[in-house]
Image (cartoon, rainbow, N blue to C red; front, side, top):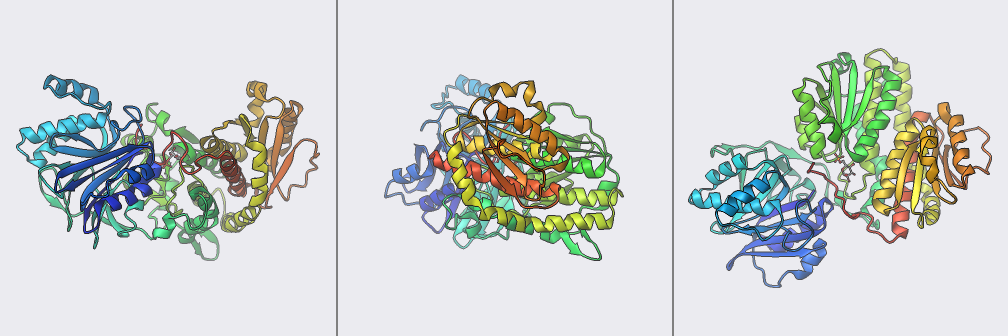
Length: 612
Ligand code: G6P
C-alpha cells in the first residue's frame, strides 16, 4: 500500500523515479510525487491521479541524480495534491508508507510550538516532527531518527532527504517493507523488489529500526547507535520480463495464463521421485516433527489468500481428521485466540507484508504456537518471522486481482496436506503417490481450460449488464465460490456474493429474481445431487444460471436448469478448484474489460495492504 522509491546514482533521477513508480503503481494509484536534489535545492513535483499524469507534469529541466518518489493509496486525508507525498517541513522532505497512529497527539504538540500543517496527512506530521528533532539535535541524523522512533507509533517506511545533505537519502522502517540494492547505475531503495529488478537481482531487506544511508556509490546500514552492520543479501530468479505484460493486454490476463507454469515451479522442488511420489520439504527445512506434534491447525490470512486457506481447510480435515480452522487475520488478531505449542498456525500471503497477517503471525508466536507461512515474496516480513516457510514460486504478481498467487497457494496447501497425512499415518505411500500424480497433472488440465477462453469471453457479454450476481457451491466449490465472487466484484464493480448453496434459502434467495446471474459450481460428487437441487431452486425464481461441472460427471442434468454449462476436465474432485478457478478468473476479467474498466488497477484497492 503506497509505493516508495529512492534513487541516487549516475542516471537521470527523475526518469528512474518515474520508471520505478510505474512499476510500483499497483501498490496505490490515487496520486504521485517526486522530490529531487538540484543545484537550486530540493524540488518537489506532485500530481493527483496516476504516475503517467505526474510524468507529463515534470519540468523539462530537472537535473538531478538523487531523489525520492511516491505513489499513494490514501489513508489519512483525501485525494489531493496537497496530501500527495513527498511532504516537506523545513529541512526535511520525505515519503512514507504506513500509518502514524499517534499523529493527532503529535500534531497538537507541534501546534503548541507554532507549527501548523498544510495537509490533512499523518505523514506531514512525521515530517514536521523530524524537522523539529533535526533542529534541536543540530543536524545530527542518528539523534534525530532515534528521537523519531521513540515518538512515532504505528507503521512506517520512510525515505528522507535533508536539505543540507545534498545527494543523500536516509531510510528507516517499522512494519512497512523496504528493500535496497546497489548496482553500477547507483543505489536504489523501494517498497518491493519489482522496482529493483532493472538494476539487480541481489538485494537486501532493510531490518526494522536500522538506518540505511543511501549515496551514489554505496548504501551503509547501521544501528540507531551508529554501529555499521552487514545486511543479509537475498537474490531472486525473476528477470524483467516476469514483471512485464509480454504482449498481453493486461497483467491479469498474463498472470491467468502463467498459472500452469507457476504451479509446476511450486511443485518441482518438492517432487522427489523415489519408489513413491511423496512431497519432500527437505529444501524448505520443514521437518516431519512439525506435523507429528500437531493436533490442531489454524489458517489465517486476508482476501484471496484467505480463500486459498478455506480450500486448504477442507482438504486437510478430509485427509488428516484433525480440526482445522480458518480465520480472517484482522479478526483473529483481536480475538484472543486459543493456541498452544501443539497448534500449527499457517499464515498465507502473496506479498508477505500484509499488516494484519503479519500481526496475526506475531500473536501466534507470542502464544507459543508453531508458525508456518505460505508466501510468494522471498525475504518478506512474514517469511522471515515464521518458524517455517513454504515459498510459492508464482513469480511477481502485478495485477491487483490475485490469480496465479491463489492457485500457487492452493498447490502449497495440497503439498502440505499430503505430507501431513502421510506422516501421521492417515494415508499410505500408494495413496499419497496417487494424489501427487494428480497434482502433477493439474498444470496440463489448466492449459486445456485456457484453450477454451473464447467461451468465457463470449459468456461474459451476458454478465456485463448485471447489477447483482451470486456464486453458489458446496464444500470445495463453496471455498472457490468465495474467490470467484471477490474476483468479480473487485474488478467489475458488480455487486456479488458467494453463498454456501444450502444456506441460500435462509435469506439470500429473496434477492434472486428474474434474470439475476447465478454461477453454480457443481464439481464435487459427494454433494452433487444436493447442489443440483439448489440450482433448481434458483432456476425456479428465474435466475440466469451458469453451471460449472466436470466432464466426467455422468449424472443426467436436464438442460432446462441452466442457461450455459461450462465444463472442467475430468479428474479427482479434489483438484477441481484449480481448473474451475480459471473459468471464474476469465469471466471476471472479460466482464471487467467489456465494462471498460481498469482491470489491473481497480478503484480504491491496492495490491499490498500494509495498513490495518
Ligand atoms: C489485497 C490484494 C488481494 C490479496 C490480499 C492479501 O487485498 O488486492 O489480492 O489477496 O491483499 O494480500 P497478501 O499479499 O497477504 O496475499
